[in-house]
Amino acid sequence: MALIIMEDCIGCDACLNECPNEAISNSADTDLEIYFINSNRCSECVGSFKESQCIDVCPVECITIDKNHIEFKEQLMEKFLSLKPL
Image 1 (cartoon, rainbow, N blue to C red):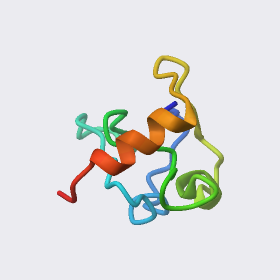
Image 2 (image 1 turned 180 degrees about the vertical axis):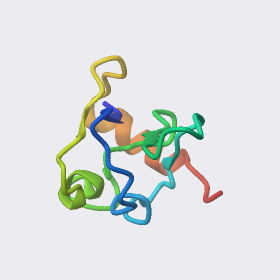
Image 3 (image 1 turned 135 degrees about the vertical axis):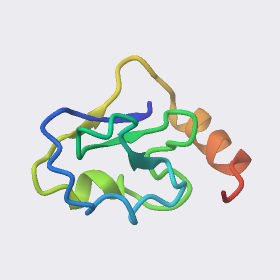
Image 4 (image 1 turned 30 degrees about the vertical axis):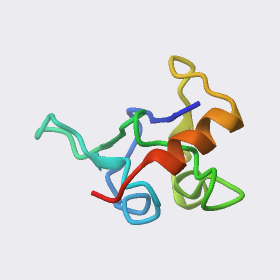
């Protein structure tokens, strides 16, 4: 499953540098100071860490599982292995 950043994001940047897959970026809507997670790049840190780093560092706990992108650990590992640095 990819993760999703909810609307209560405060734009603190804590998660931005924690993502090993560079899946987190600024919102396309410049009026909002929130981030979003690219589900094509998010492996929930499988292959890099035991826990999702963005969830661990979020001070407002606004990052959760995206139920629209359900994936199993094996799929997440495949995704991680297929990703190339940007």
